[in-house]
Length: 134
Image (cartoon, rainbow, N blue to C red):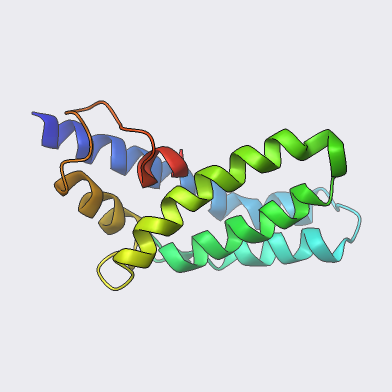
């Protein structure tokens, strides 16, 4: 039962990220956002994350880092947001660093974490990569 719930949660996270990322370049171009090198870098980074229907973990973390840099450029107004994003990103990066070969895709990385027993059934533990990616 717990395994099914985990698979469902993992699939939901991946599915929503796929939807978001597949529409991001169209949104960006459609709304003709004023050119900004930092924003352009973030858009390009997220555009490359999808590998078929899978999310490439290394590219996703790289895109999140680019997004973090953009948020940090927002100064004091975004300091708390940047700190929270960085903390969450570090959780996911720590697991990926340990299992970078087996965790090529986000779904496999999250499955490795689930199998480690870190979570209490369907309750996600914090700190964890799953919480970090939410």
